[in-house]
Image 1 (cartoon, rainbow, N blue to C red):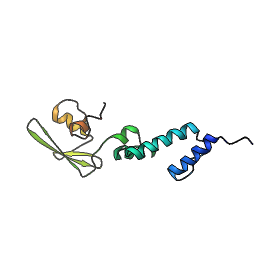
Image 2: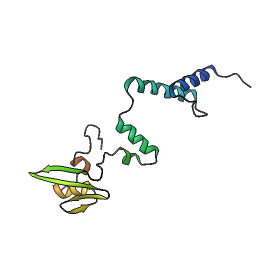
Image 3: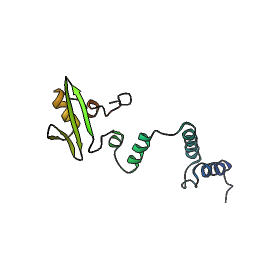
Image 4: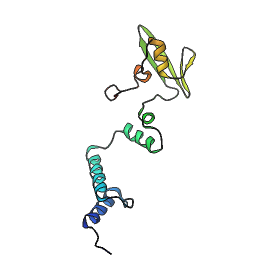
Length: 135
């Protein structure tokens, strides 16, 4: 048997200290070093924001990235938007949206109905943070 790599031995010890368990087998020293640096940054600066952690959990469960990062109102929520002097009320349903006793498949369809032009429904109703939305 060959000699154990001293770098690997130290990284394995650092890993167990940081995460409380040994790393998965076959991780490279370079990868473990990056993971440890990331963990140290998270501890120092507070880690990822809750919405990002939530989106990453959804992606890990197999949801698409676009579905996981979309901020959507939950069923039962009511959205209110004023447009050209009229106030519109939309109720979020499990399968769609209700406005003026009519069920709509998407917020974008409602936004188009209200404005007469194509809009991002989530953006129209204020569900998208414009500073983070790059679309």
